Amino acid sequence: MRFTVISKNDEKSKYTREYLIQGMKKRGMEEDNIHPEIIISVGGDGTLLGAFHMYQHLLKETMFVGVHTGNLGFYADFHPEEADLLIDLIDRGKFVETEFPLVAVTVNTDDGEERHLALNETTLKMVQGSTLAVDVGIGGKHFEKFRGDGICVSTPSGSTAYNKSLGGALIHPSFRSIQLTEIASINNRVFRTIGSSIILPSHHTLNVYPNKADTHLLTIDHLHFQKNGIRSIEYQVAEETIKFARFRHFPFWHRVRESFISSER
Ligand code: NAP
Ligand code: MN
Image (cartoon, rainbow, N blue to C red; front, side, top):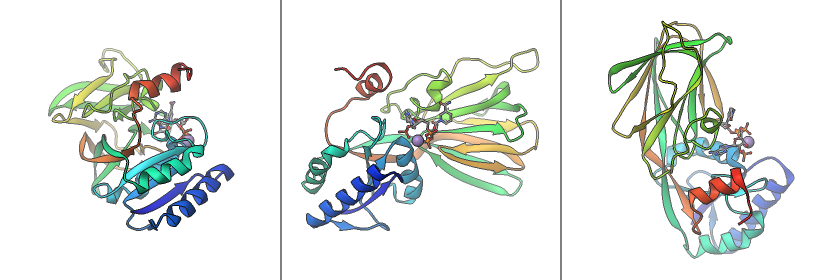
């Protein structure tokens, strides 16, 4: 098994990373940062987002595992003290692969088209603190005129992140879907939005058309891009998925409870 270990920059994460690398090599596994079959992320959910973007060109042939050195994460659910167990389970192939949906974002600008994948969410805002004004289309038909701070389009596994702070629903990652949530919409006679978050299935497309050509801020997970001349953005459930190696049963709703309600069992 070819592996790589990515870690956050704190001492505990760096130590855990070294421990895992040495332990896996001892078991005859090969460290390969270019073509890993398994990517272990040590840190938090943010660390896993970084690992995802670093290796998103290998999504078909690789899977991810998250080890948390801080609080329990949604993507990072292994404890560093379980490192030996983790090494053993990987070596013996005692895991199952699970797939989570991603959101595909296609941005059309005056300069051409670019495509991104997000694991948590993508947002659109204005750079200069002014309000974002866009026309929103669903399935090729005009749906609403949005004006406000911005919009957020999230994946099911990202529904517990920014989307949750915006009042969006939590969606089980087995639903191949994307969710549109408003960020502080203004409602008046000109701009009228539905208000509720909207969940689209994989065969539906969401389109956004900026009303002004000013500089927009496009975020993809933790990444931020300033974009000029955006004509439209299309959002869809991506054909690509992220694969996780699962070593034990830890249902999504248990994770939600442990993260947000109580860690007492
Ligand atoms: P960050 O500012 O450290 O992340 C914010 C928090 O979100 C961290 O506690 C992070 O966990 C947690 N998180 C990340 N993905 C999650 C998920 N799928 N479910 C539940 N919690 C999750 O920045 P970051 O670590 O680079 O993460 C980027 C993410 O921050 C974005 O994708 C967005 O979802 C989130 N964010 C949230 C808000 C908000 O809620 N108002 C605003 C901007 C961005 P760790 O500490 O384990 O990394
Ligand atoms: Mn973080």
